[in-house]
Image (cartoon, rainbow over all chains, first blue to last red; front, side, top):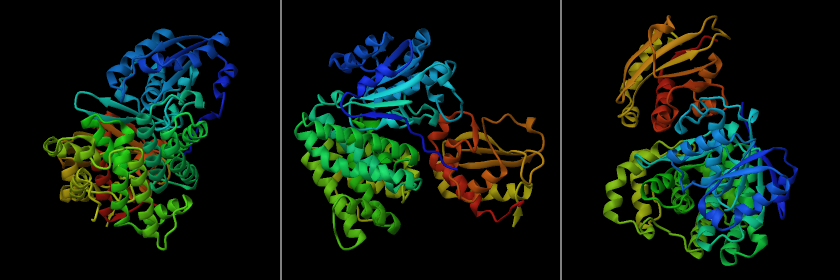
Amino acid sequence: MYNFVCPLIVYGDNSLDYIAQIKGNKAFIVTDKNIVKLGLIKHVTDQLDAKKIKWEIFDEVEAEPSTDTIRKGGVAVGKYQPDWVIGVGGGSCMDAAKAVILLLARPELKPEELSINFDFNFREKARLMAIPTTSGTGSEASWAIVLTDTKDNYKIGLGTPEDMPDVAILDPVMVMGMPPQVTADTGMDVICQAIEAYISSWGTSLTAGPALIATRLALEYLPRAYKDGNDVDARREMMNAAMMGGLSGSNSMFGLGHGTGHALGAIFHIPHGRTVGLFLPYTLEYIINDSEEATTKIAEIARYCGLIAESDKECAKALIAKIRALAKEIKQPLSVKDCGIDKAKYEKEMPGLISRALNEIMTMTAPRVPGTEDLDKLFRYAYEGKSIDF
Amino acid sequence: MAKTLTQEWCDLYKEEINNSKAYEEAAKTWEGDFYFIYDAGGPLKEPAYVHIDLHHGKCRACELVTDPNKYKPAFTLAGPYAVWKQVSTKKLDATKALITKQLRMTGDMAKVMRYTKAANELTNCSIKVPTEWLD
């Protein structure tokens, strides 16, 4: 038995007009201060005002939201008792919205308990809408919630298929102003998610389609969106790619790039997309060195993206080279050293990096699962920018 | 070969866990006991309970329990016999079984999520026990 969980996806120009079709009286908007400052929230609140839906904003979400923030959001949503919760922002805001709506239904739980262990039935109280302002995590089409336990710098993967948003609105107007650095960071996340979802040991034919298309779209449109933020076609297609990457990944799980990238991000506080994108080429090399089946799958992606070579292995390597070339083009770090991390500090944190990566569920769903020794080498090679030869 | 859901099987499982370097390494800081609960149904007329006490990379006890009130474990993992069989033979990933609600868990999920590798190694240990299934 498998599940494929999916929201209603409203996409394309003027998608925010969909809000005029919703039924409800009170909306609780979960976002961050920057989104409010940029005026992006107004696109949403104008629609709510026109529909005479009251709203309240919780704008305390930080990057990689902490369990403390979610606790505060849970209290606020409990006081407001909305019939819609709307996450507006990047993955952090949308993940926070999912956590908050779960707490609306089960206020007695701690944020770290928001998992498959419980039934929530939150739709008896409210529905969940996600409106991305970045094209990256695909959180709008995913039930995963990533929170940070700030006590020991641990990212906690939570969530339940129940918290898949009811509606995801992909309106390009929300991403047009994204700065190049954020476009690049989040765009690398799309590529990592899509490729890892395609080769995940949990992948099925249902998850393969969106993953394949997301990869091709991102490889084509990310450089365009990075160079010209006003390129509406590129913005639109990157939004679609991000959503499809999230959809595919949340139904098949991701892989080793996420397992290792999460570990680095948790300890050194580097944006999610940048870290997973950084590790993707290394982890793909690691996989093709020992898994013919996965190499064939990576080659399938490569061919779908127009990369032709004679053998599967050459095709897979061509895709890895393409990812590295793209990362360079959009000024992403190619090694951990490029992130400005001091080598001595990195060495000191090595046990923590390995332990975190080992215990990521996403590491377990990779086609080749490393143990402690291989992870140790992988982290060291990635620091130096050395291709994986083991 | 040991028949599943017998004390003999539990003893062999405990031995496999305690022989596993991979489990020991992955679970070196783990503390917590479980009930593995097999729901009544299929070949089982009554539910079956296996109590397993895991501590710092070792299995301190694995016991087939007739009275479920005998222990108050920190965690329970419950599901139909057929699902347990699929998980124990690695035909179904335990996490996937949880996500699709084929298995049900109680206890501190956030803690368990930090020991994914150890959970995986526990399944690897169960495969190594030569098992005679009930069906």
